[in-house]
Structure formats: C-alpha cells, structure tokens
Length: 203
Image 1 (tube, rainbow, N blue to C red):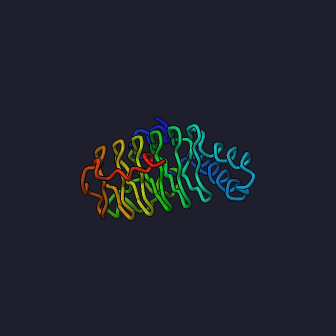
Image 2 (tube, rainbow, N blue to C red; image 1 turned 90 degrees about the vertical axis):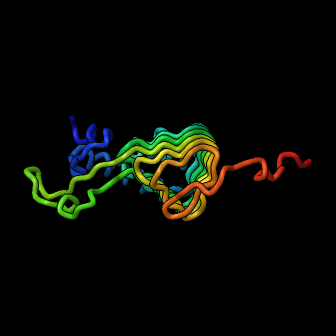
C-alpha cells in the first residue's frame, strides 16, 4: 500500500511521504489563491473554492478563510454552508450530507496522534526525520446544524436532523434528531414539535 492508501484506510502512515507532501502543498496553494479572491467576484471565488474542494455539492458555499489538509477527501451534499474560519482536515474521508450548515470556526478534523510521547514524537527513520500519524473518517448526516466553535473529532458520525450546540467537542457518535452539546459532547434532549417556531406558518 502507498502511504496515501494507508492514510485513507486509517492505518499508521508517514505524513512526509512525497505524494502526500505534494498533495498538501497543492492544497495550500489553492487555499492561498482562494484567500486572495474578492468575494464580490462570485464566479472566480466559486471556481477556486471548487478547485480546493472538488467534492463540494450543488449550491454549496464556504465563507472566506477555508483551511484543509488535502481538500480532495471531502465530499458534501447539496446546500452545504460553512461560515468563516472553516477547517476541514481530511486525512481520512469527510462525508457530509445535504442541507448541512456550520457556524463560524467549526473544525472537522480526522487526524489522530499516538497518545504516548515516544510513539508520537518525530524520530529518525530510513527515509528521514518525521512522525507517524493515523486518522479516522467523519460522517455528518443531512439537515444537521453545527453551531459556532464546534470541533468534530476523527471517527465520529453525526446523525440526520441533529443540532450541535456552540463550543461542543464531539468525540463520540451523536444519533439523529437530537440537540447535543458540551465538552465532551453529549445528547441534551431529543428535538420535538415543542421546538417548532412556526416561521413557515406565518403569512
């Protein structure tokens, strides 16, 4: 297996591998170009955004200030929106459903590092000095609202129609149809008809 194949499979891999380093540098360049684009030039902004995130779904948008590891391992559904300060670290696949919205400074991060220092720190290998890493995929269902300053960690699945409260750190799966929050993030309660504002009922 190549180091990229190991990475995407959730195995220990060398992040300084030449293929991965080139892919990462290309993503940094695309993110830089995007950061230098006037949002008033909507056509160019969207072109560069899709260059960075080729898996972006129809009618989707991320506000200026987008950061990725590679960009090519992110796939979203339609009508995806992410506000300022978006971070999508896609060492493993990030899959996002339809009609998902994220507030400011939301971090969706698949990388994981060994807990023990002697396994985590950089060391000398035959191919040079580097560390060893691994990653876990993230899946976010449809109709999910992720509020400001939330971190979604590797290995997590968030079910459809759920809301993640501001400031949460999501370390474990969250089921469908609930309000969840806290550090670590836990289910607060199910969402129900009591939460309906009736905004579409008003004339």
